[in-house]
Length: 180
Image 1 (cartoon, one colour):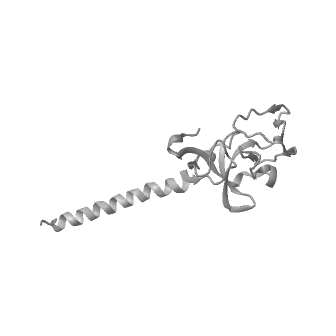
Image 2 (tube, one colour):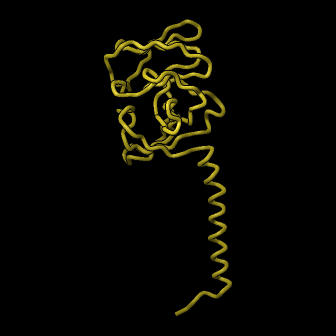
C-alpha cells in the first residue's frame, strides 16, 4: 500500500481550497445579481410554461432597460412579496389596457389603439377589465387566462417588484433552450 507524501497531501488540499474559493467568487455574484433559478408552479402560464418547468431568470437586463411588451417576467406578488409569480407583460407605463373576450387592446401614449396578437393565450369569456397605467406600472397576464391570478384580479405591478425575465428553460429536457 502506498501513501502520498505529506507535501502532496497539503498541495491537494490547497488546490481544493483554491477551487472552492474561485467557485464562490464566481457563483455567488452571478447567483445574486445576474441570474437565478425559478421553478414554475401552477398552470397560469400554460401552454407556454408548464407546472414544474425549470427556468433561469435574467436579473441583469432590467438594470439597463425597462421590461418590454410580451416578455415573460418573474416578480414578487404585490399582495405578498414573499411569493414569486411568472406572467407576461401586456401593458407598459402610460398605456391603457382593455382585456375581455374580444381580445386585448392597448391604447398607447400617443393615442393609437392596437389589438394584440396573442397566439400563446388561452381564450376566455370574462368581464372586460380596463386599466390606465401610471409611470412605473405594468399590466401582466398569465397565458392561461381562465385560471390566471394576474393584473385583472390584483391590479397593476409596480416596477420595483420585478425580479427579471425568463431567459433559459432547463427542464423538461425536450424543451431546453433560450427563451428570448
